[in-house]
Image 1 (cartoon, rainbow, N blue to C red):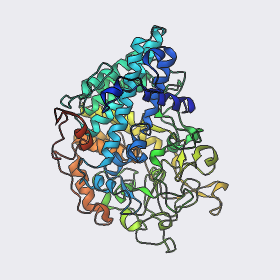
Image 2 (image 1 turned 180 degrees about the vertical axis):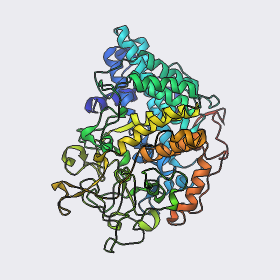
Image 3 (image 1 turned 90 degrees about the vertical axis):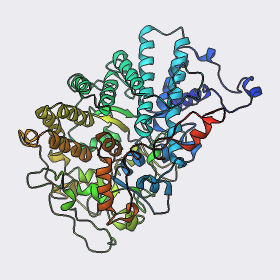
Length: 593
């Protein structure tokens, strides 16, 4: 379901259905000029378009969110700021003075007036508003078959579950509004996990196994999200039961049995997307006819190497800590507890004209599909030149992010140069099968099933160990499009854990290995901060990160994560000010802000 003009029109249609607020009574008594009344679109065609509008809000770029808020990246669905930068996987990048609101988020000194939080909040409630409009009109439409009614409701409730899941993990206590709500000044005084579970359970029970359009949610995407919701609540038995079904029976919306693709990189390439590993993805497209990149990863527009073929803008630079995590020992296993004791050789402080020899010690090849580093092929764009592609190395480190970068060979098809910074057609995969396997491993380990947990982790590691997942040198360094040699670009060595390894570690250390595998496999995909919080490890891990990284790169120097406060972001002050009854806000601020 690639976004098209039709979907953009549907998004506008959905927006026209929103109830108006903060307007005078005379205005409310008059019909909105140009808006369609509910009785006109309370039919299958109208409801289907509203549903497409609810999907269109997934990218965070629609009305009432990023565009109105003035920062497309503030509501990026990848959560690169809130999940990866705040999780110690990436520096903000660029220069120290550019987008300073991100600096405060990375250092946990933000207050509720930080506009980034308000933009993200609005983007998610925009999605909820569109799903509720769909459900409300669905109840009125009389020309819809029962099968289509169940499907539409299932898709809408899946999407609503997603939007509320995002709000829950970011802000914790948030107001709950559904299609029956008439008073929108709702307090944030209830735990919404049961509501999220109910939406995903309904979607799982009522959605088909496959869909006519690959971008639509199916039964197994809903099941995967339900299992994830259970895991976040530490309901490990329930999570295991769901993940067992997903792993054994699950298929993609286009009918592919879930599995790991042979090539790790195929998860981050528009030419190979919607594959068997894609559980649920936001469908992106280049050159959609609008003259903008709003449907082409606009939320990532800042995150390309600076002074490079991509033009802009040098944000989202992987940390030294993250790169060091990919160091392996002679057996191809990670240094889970002390990876920073054997740091990766880097070119921090060196200009691109200074001599440099890349690290020669063993590393996991996923490093070089995740982190762009000096003298290693940057996809097919040539070797990363180091400082020449870094806007301000002194404050952001020597690395560039890589998973969202399009290939030079197919740039004419999958990149979008309609704006001052690039867009791309690379889907945002919200859940991929590797993520499911590692969540299942976590549930199994928590229940004491260490052998099964190790089997799932080893499936992920065995894929990384395949020869085709190494990065190879160029045939002609001056013409990367000429192809690659059979010579690995680094000393790659990764292997599955030996039989009985997790049993020997015991439950607690086995869990640490699983947590670390998530860091390696899912790096820079927006999960890290939220994982650390739900594991209860955020203070330990992030304060250690600040101590190590801050000794080399100053942007996080002196930062502190405070337990009991920083697990959740502050409720935006703008929303507290707006949501009032009798001059008193119905919203309660999170502790510590």
